[in-house]
Amino acid sequence: KTLDLLHTNPDVDFFYINSYHLTTDYIFNFPQPFDVSNLPLKMEPFSGYRTSGRLPFFELIDPAKSFDFLGGMFLAVFKKSMWVEKVNLLDPQAIHDTRTFSHFDNTFPHVKIFANAFGGSMAYFNAEPLSVCLTGAREWSPMYPLIHSVRLVEALEEYRKNGLGLLQYWKCRNFALNNFVSDMAAMFIYRKESGWIYVNPLKTWLSNLFYPNTYLSFFYFLIRKLANTFGKKEAH
Image (cartoon, rainbow, N blue to C red; front, side, top):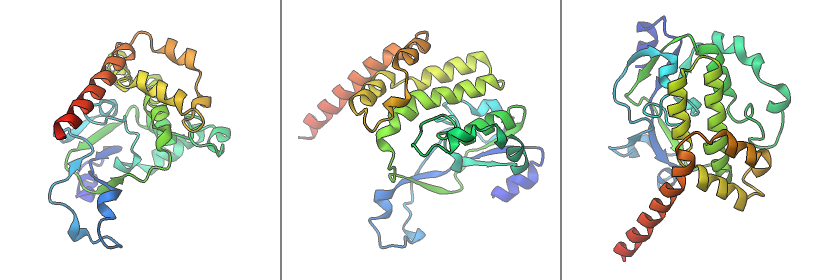
């Protein structure tokens, strides 16, 4: 099916190919190596967007289609020649830094290349999942708040520099800040392993002052906590 998409859309440079989502816990409940006959009949897709079709590349930068703004490289099929033309934009010092996620370029190198290579391209969103990918094996889990509330914002800045419309940028950035307060708090509390040393807290706060979720994220956090508390009480 992927090959059919490539053959029938020769002028498309970038394809978002949806994938089903499973956890590693599910996989390891079965004998290894895993037999694909044990895949569940119903699986959740990574993207809940249901309309397939051609669209300008920057229309993919939308939380309704890609909640992490193409951060999941396993969902992307693209023209290699266009990637190769832009790969030299990566900062060599940053990508050779062995510290995990110490820079944007060694966190989302593919996003930087995508933004520069495909900004003017025609893309294709394929809603039907054509693969199964796993989550759960994240040795970097303590750094998730850094990814979510700092690096994803930097990804949007890269898209904006390369042509993402102002209104779409604002909408996406506000969405990316939906856990901002709790993420900043978690980074500080677990600062020895969260990547806190890579963040300028004051600059980060000031750069997000004009986005409602910077403040509303505190109330979202309280609502989630209350919902979890009452849910546990009801379960008992």
